[in-house]
Length: 111
Image (cartoon, rainbow, N blue to C red; front, top):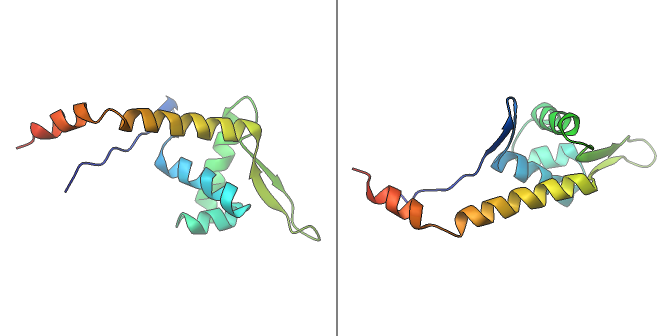
C-alpha cells in the first residue's frame, strides 16, 4: 500500500480545513445545495451544516450563502471568500504533493 498524503490545516483550536471540508465546499459548487453536497460526500446534513456554520462564523465573510426554499427552491453557493478559501486550500495541497521526495524518504525508513 502506497502512503497517502492528506493535508489538514489547523487554523486555530476548533477550526481546521482538510480533505473533508474541501470535498464539501466543492460539492456545494457542483450541486448548489448543502443537503445534496452532504449526500455526495456521504455525510449527514447535520454534520455538513455544522461544518458550514463553523466556517461561516470563522472568516471575515461567510464562505457559503444560502437562500431559503419555497417558490424559488432555495439553494446554496460559495461566496467570493468561500471560493478564495477553497482555492488557497487546493494550492497548499498541490504544493505539498508536488514535492514527494520527503514522503518517499520517510516511507523508506519504515520497517
